[in-house]
Image (cartoon, rainbow, N blue to C red; front, top):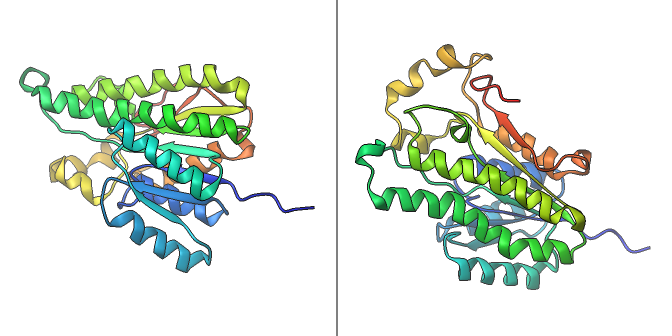
Length: 254
């Protein structure tokens, strides 16, 4: 009997220091063949090389701008050629720029929608057919509690886009369930990484854990990665169309 083919997962915006990279590392650690995509020209290839050294098997890194519909299609074709299948997709690419709604530029609004929502659509549009051809699979879309929360901390464009990701998740789950594909979303609260220092002032972090979380700390990328790995696994085989908050209790949601 021939061995089972290794399952292939594609993760977007996966080569930085945040959630995407943590998901890649978590999936690699449990045996997935992970394709690392990122808009950065160099980093996905460097992470692929690092993981190959660590795990003793090849990983594929690709430069990809998820807002470019044709580029996503070309990446899907390249991955299909290189790996022969796609079993999982994590739509992690995101963008936010904090501007009050009454001062927000059209460029900020459009960039949030393009990356956070349209980028998710572009990847679903091109990778779901590959997953259907592979006989099924699972998708995790990274949304945000901003899609639920009424707050002036997070930005109207970002909140609107992430709420759209939640709705897109539910409709996609309904459409592709008959093909054996599950689609869920994760809505993180504040997940710390250094890039956030470019968006939020230092005082935003100073008392966040004490003021808002129930667990006395700020979230870390590996918290989201563990949930993503579970949702992509067979252990979550009866879970689809759901949005899971992961915020340390900042915004409990039923």
